[in-house]
Length: 236
Image 1 (cartoon, rainbow, N blue to C red):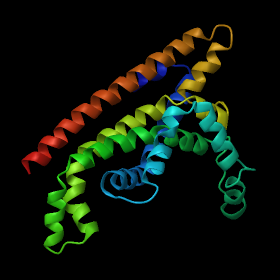
Image 2 (image 1 turned 30 degrees about the vertical axis):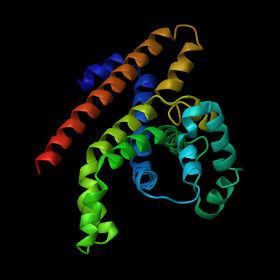
Image 3 (image 1 turned 180 degrees about the horizontal axis):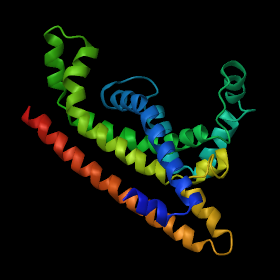
Image 4 (image 1 turned 90 degrees about the vertical axis):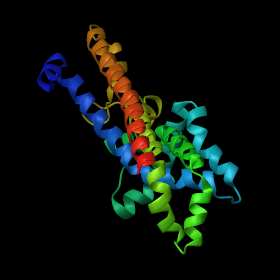
């Protein structure tokens, strides 16, 4: 199966697919702990600035992706407000590198992840958590033993949706890290590049098909995994 796909795709196209999967994987994994924390905070806690946090989390869904990419550039670029110190103190550079593409994808996919997990947390009866607390369990232990297993379907669904969203990210990525073949050129930016040159339509079409297949597979997998985990949790 893999050999047939690699034979169907050209070297540049296959390179873009591999980089997209790498970027999306790390974007999802790196943002998951923060996504769980933010989703739980929005669902369970009351604190000053809660609505502001909620707005900031969902802002990438409303802003043009190019604006988000530009904000990342001025914040995390080599001369950015934070980026210059990251490079100077830790040698970390995001702009025009695949790690920057992962950051851009994570930012754009984060709202979908948080929303799915938040809905899962809100579906958990707070009385279950309160009952465990009255028995002497600490809040972290209650979360690990009670809340986390119950929201696992939401976590998995949110992670898969975030991965699919990261695969399709274009505007923020090309603004923040440009479109460098082999370094920052993902599936969407490769499609854009192929459409700018004569004879590139066939390669672009193949990548469009790959993007559709990955997105549909992610959506179906999210549904299947969520249902299976939910049944196991309900039966335990």
